[in-house]
Length: 147
Image 1 (spheres, rainbow, N blue to C red):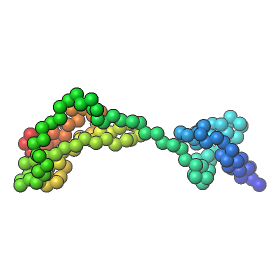
Image 2: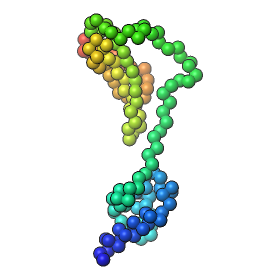
Image 3: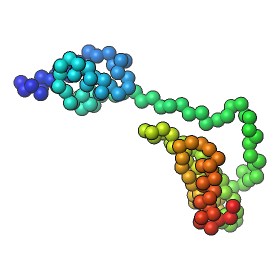
Image 4: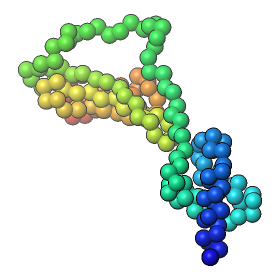
């Protein structure tokens, strides 16, 4: 048997015996560090974990998107659910959504023209602020829309 095979077998046995609750997040790094502490030279932990179908748990950060205290009054419902438009730039609707990324949350503000159903303004940012919406509105002015 080759030395590489013996190390791989040792890692497989180690993965079978280890308490995986201890390695919920980033287990490859932690298991690799523990094997190195035991004097082993291993660079195949991730591959072995894939083969054994062992995965880490991914914890997403909780983001508050709603003011449950209702301290701000909502905007007036001008459209009254009438989403039909007879000409371009007559009616716009907007939304802000967030996307989880490795570096945190990415907020995206979108403005859609109800006549063409096209996105006519958008902006992205790291924070959900009024500046995010203002940048999307500024894009409307850049493409010839009236604010």
